[in-house]
Length: 223
View 1 (tube, rainbow, N blue to C red):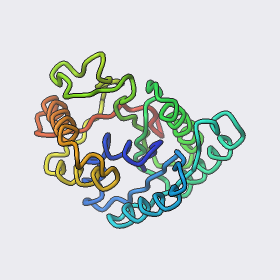
View 2 (view 1 turned 90 degrees about the vertical axis):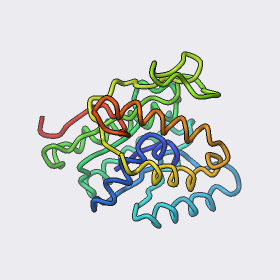
View 3 (view 1 turned 90 degrees about the horizontal axis):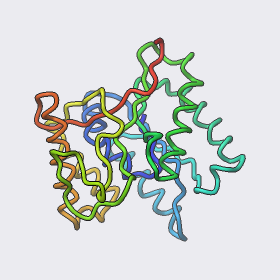
């Protein structure tokens, strides 16, 4: 299960992992907390649901705006998330980090944490919640110094520090294709693809593989 404020949050940070696990036969569930804006919001939601379905993933939308996090709708969303956790019994949950300064990302991290914590008694031993790297401590306008894990004016990398790495060697092309399908903007900006490919290479060096994605363990059932 991958829980993101927006669709491309998931692909950017965990796309290779999802592609790999899907190929291995895992069921993939997307939970998108954010609301689609504008008159075409419903249409775009349907498009993204179709894209997810096309590669074998289920998509669930909570439709929360940033204002909703301070209303009873956030409690309703927590109830829905608890129900989803209880019905799907996820082996692995990937989501934002509570260190993320983007308000939607932070609140999504809290929602995921609370629902996973409350569902732990129903989850199998070893089921775990992981946070992917923070992507909202600033904005980057070029390729960061990847060996030094980022630039103070171009966003934070490796925060929180990963303790779990997934070898995505052989899945980078699939990840880039997935990102481009959910966010066509990426297809017109090759530097974005280069940035994520090179960052995956840096993470791969840590574990002796060509490419990897990194996650921090937040909670683990049965421990």
